[in-house]
Length: 116
Image (tube, rainbow, N blue to C red):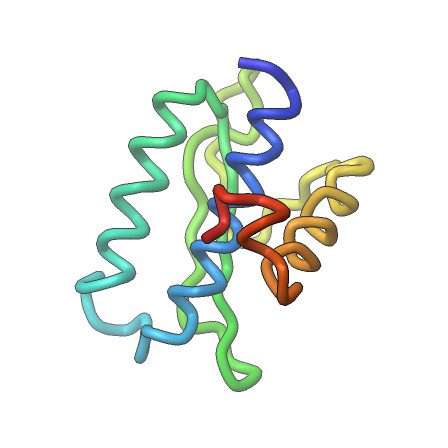
């Protein structure tokens, strides 16, 4: 898998998390509905893409409604990813910004059919 396709998939995963933020109610209850589907998708995608670890947080109305770490933060010592794990993301935030602009643009379907 190329860097570009992995970046696009990670951006899509990020956007899916944003969309799920509108559908969630609370994290205290067991995962169900959209959050359970998101959790299953993240586990499946992480395994398929060979991603060692990641963390997701969904914030709605200034409150964290979902936060979870997946996988390992280090392949050397096997420490797990936690909700407060800090990742060195380098310049990846530029791709997320680009994906957000594409999704919010009025001609998104003609620009990037994957986000329709």
